[in-house]
Image 1 (cartoon, one colour):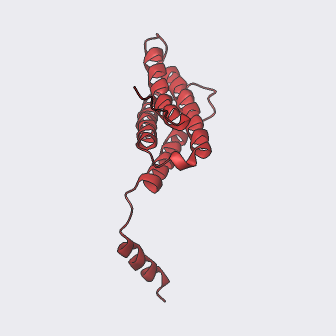
Image 2 (image 1 turned 90 degrees about the vertical axis):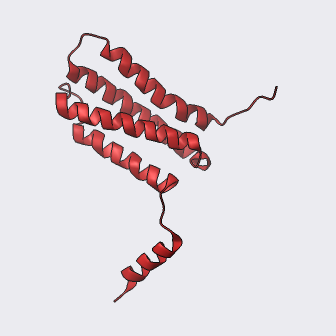
Image 3 (image 1 turned 90 degrees about the horizontal axis):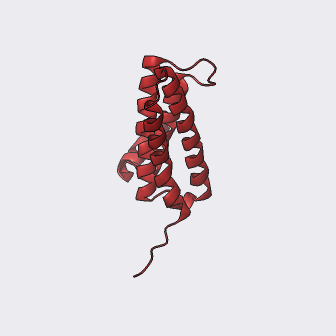
Length: 136
């Protein structure tokens, strides 16, 4: 049987969102205030995003992969849920970010997703946009 060796980036892109989701489920089982659960989830998510970005920078050639697209999509979905929960329940006093910071990080992940994985304009559309922008 042939063994498939996947790049380290693929394994990491898959594992980060899964770890964040597992931590969220575990923390939700505790009997602690919802703003503490949201705060812990957001801290863990921000750490996952940072790790994801570090792996992305190290393995830039692998960013066209389906695994990259799936990983960044999962982080976006988790961030959206956290942003909604942070608005609803608030965050624990002392955290160094606001609900708006979560939403901003989601926005940056969305930009990366669009830039790398599309959708992209048709070349004719890009030419026409440039013509319009360069008109006197």
